[in-house]
Length: 403
Ligand code: C5P
Figure 1 (cartoon, protein in one colour):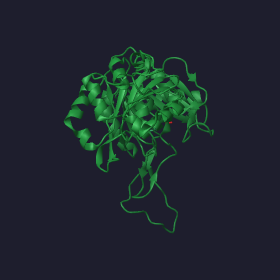
Figure 2 (cartoon, protein in one colour):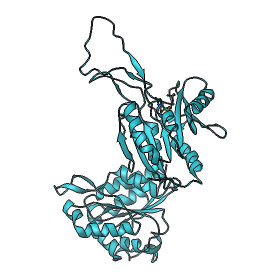
Figure 3 (cartoon, helix red, strand yellow):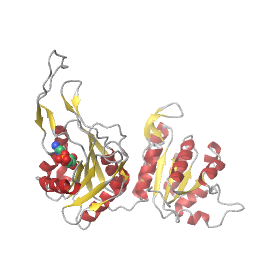
Figure 4 (spheres, protein in one colour):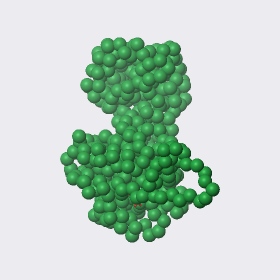
């Protein structure tokens, strides 16, 4: 979605991770991007240009000179795209880029490029740890190049360490930030997601059907739009979104403790977690045994977290969610008032395609000021975008607080 119609130049240099660049090209094309691949000589030893040409539907740049090569290609290729990604970037390519050497098509394009560059190094861990490589990366970062630090893990050379090309998913996420409007830049967003687990004994707990999908979608989209994001997550099966600081919690009281600490420096709190309203009165230290009679479970109320934080509000914008099965607008408004929120995202959960654990939702945005906005059924990713449109506008004229 975020790559629809975007023009991406994928620079591939010669390392074994070249095979992952093929997958990257494929994913970009599937996401709607127009992908122009430029390969170094070394890269062509690992993968043929034909592979990329077949995937992207475009000719692959392989050299500066030759028949059919436009004499100005090396100038405009890095200027007419939305972003450039170098994956994998070898120590040699990084060194030439940092030193300003242009001795082939890719390095010459980089010298003339005016668009954002995402550099994804991949090499042997000793090579990556070499101070000259680190210095070159620091120099490039200083000049505004975004470096996606390699992951740790087993390398093709048999060693284990830093040097792996980042996962395709992470490269896509980082690149999507470079091609998206940064309307939340400088903002710190606190987002909560998922259910809570309220322990009864060492093996049992009370919980609910929240999957965390809505909150994760908000966190991911907010980071892509430039925000610094802290996602406080209850237990979910979802992978941590790239770029987002994730704090894992289980019970409502833990969630409250983390939020109290982080709230003062946040610009907004988006409370998508499905917090349990009750917890067991006592926590058994050993597993509860089956008895001969019916058991009674005593529950006590959890604090209303978002309401407590609203009372501490200085400048923060507070957004809550309301899952309803009745009169959406009336109930939404009542909760907005009661919890002192700036916006409530209300949805009907009594239908199969909205609410808990599915990928779609149909919500109404009810702001404190202004008219409610009923959105049609859409993906949770799209709901997140619409919610952030409202937030970006709301935060618009304000100074970022930061911390
Ligand atoms: O009252 P209800 O649970 O429907 O309200 C939902 C909103 O309140 C959500 O944003 C949810 O995260 C928040 N909430 C909370 N603390 C609770 C219960 C709900 O912050 N104990």
